[in-house]
Amino acid sequence: MTKLAGAVLALALSTLAGHAAAATALPGQVEGQPLPSLAPVIKRVSPAVVNIGVRGTVQAPRHPFFDDPNFRRFFGMPPGGTPREREFRSAGSGVIVDAKAGLIVTNAHVVENATEITVSLVDDRELKAEVVGTDKGSDVAVIKITEGRLPADIKFADSSKLEVGDFVVAIGNPFGLQHTVTSGIVSGTGRSGINPEGFEDFIQTDAAINPGNSGGALVNLRGELVGINTAILSQSGGNMGIGFAIPSNMVTSVMQQLIEFGEVRRGVLGVSILSLSADFRKSLGLGDNVQGALVSQVVEDSAAAKAGIQAGDVITAVNGQEVKNAAELRNRIGMLRVGDRVDIALIREGKPRNVTATIGKQSEAEAAAAELHAALAGADLADAPPEQVQGGGVQVRAVEAGSPAARIGLRANDVILVVDRTRVANLAQFREAIKDRPSFLLQVRRGEQRVLLPVR
Image (cartoon, rainbow, N blue to C red; front, side, top):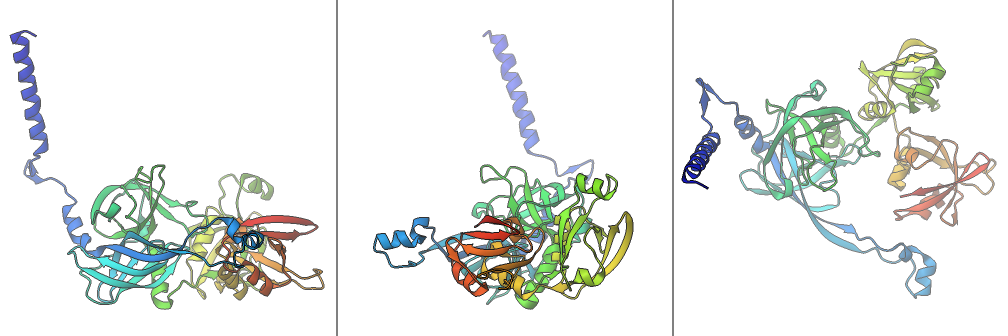
């Protein structure tokens, strides 16, 4: 390299370095106007976001051979065995919703199996908390501090007004890094299919959400809560630009019931439904642009039956809000309380109609099914009439569309006869056969057929 070339190169590098230095020191103002910053919003909202540390115990997994009575007998092990437990520690985030009452909202999965909950505030204080109530269906939980005071709470926004492209900010504690702030936009609304067993109407965002953000705040640029961060889609376990938050309107509905009752008392409409596919539209003579949920069955004496809803109706809207498919209808009804009056728009034989239903309560049989096993939630179970089923069994009287029971393959009028290799003649025997068992195989009579359904 010649001296001249070296001098030119040195000058070029010097110029680039000068530009880099200038770029890293942005002016506070441009033409007398201050540069936009999220700092004021973050300073106002951050005190309402907390870190949640959890200690608890869970049952340790074991090989299925240990549940086999023949295996245990062969090796001289006592029948049944003793479940092993292990301690765990985990962390998440939460949002203060009522500072005076000491109430914090977070995800149900953050505090699941918790025996000790510690809340860390923005000022580094640590407070003990206890669970007020949890709802796995929506993944919402409310906890309350037992002593001390909380600094501030957050204002809720109307999440139904959120639009794709709106700017949002996520605040939480990913990987234990307290009060981390990331920003992005709303990438989509009304997302479902992330947790098939839940009630879903997720906000999708590209604001970075990572492990530890669960239960944290998703806020708009006014510092109002639009959602509670809950899940990510990722191949690596870290952020890939696809995160999900529970809308603030759903959080409010669930939170109010958890505070009032300690649980969510969901109402039911009493219908089995299917999404309106192209084939169904053609069969019903409907246009290609028609969306909704097709009613395949109406439960006797249910809210739907009393309102005059019939099999073959297509429900298109609930309380003025359009229903695009069966999942949306299930979510809308699932967020209503027993006794709520609901206006339902539907299409019957090609003509629009409107009916009003009073949401009913879940039958004792349906509630009992959910208590027996999470995978049976949504099934209405009863002793099978002995005159109809020789040797007895458990009759499935109805199955809520989209419920866990529907997803494992149970249908209305099925009769459960055998659990693994144990014959069951009634609900009491069925309850005993599946007690404390995470998975089993059902043998079901369906018409003249025998069907095997795995339950996990």
